[in-house]
Image 1 (cartoon, rainbow, N blue to C red):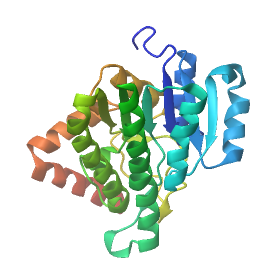
Image 2: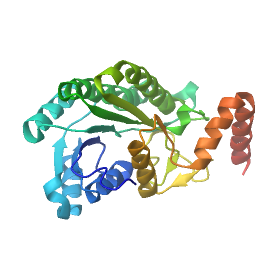
Image 3: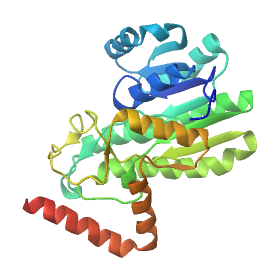
Image 4: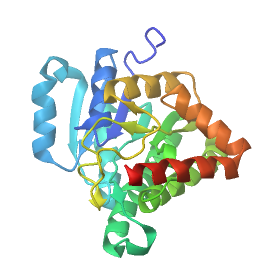
Length: 267
């Protein structure tokens, strides 16, 4: 990582109290950044505060539900009142969903879109206004590797992240003139409780994964990508190469995925 890149920067991050978000929060604090940690759970925020007590001067907690528009708007009001400024917004909050398309429960699908797409959209909407006023800023959306290579049983979740990715791509073109950068990260499987907490059907332990990283390693690689200003950030070389393979040989890539999941079902 670049020396002193994060020193005294202020970063707003949603879903900051567990998994990847927690790992990103901890690394940022260790690098000297100020972190505005957002979660809808007051208990989780208290737990984060107790765990990171040595960084209490640079850790700011906001209880907010990203699915609630007024909570997102109020988040930036609090940041303005307390900190005056911010440098980055990381949209990390997310909900999983595993189910065949035919059997997806509409209620579950709406919950996933409410968090993964609309929650990020609300934060982007008010974040853009905030950053325009100060003349600069960076928005980072945590999407999913599945956006680049969809796989069976994750259509609902992947669709929500694909919508976010497309929104970000358009926003990037619109906001360049305002000094605002929009980046997207496409992590593969990360060893967190994300799958355990997913809606729909349970994930089998042996389900196919291209890669599986610890949240700390994934967080470091995402932050390194942000430092470099990468439009698309991948958390492993294997992920990046498979995305490239998919772009060049889409039908062959689909066959590889089909065979992998068919083999998995037979084991």
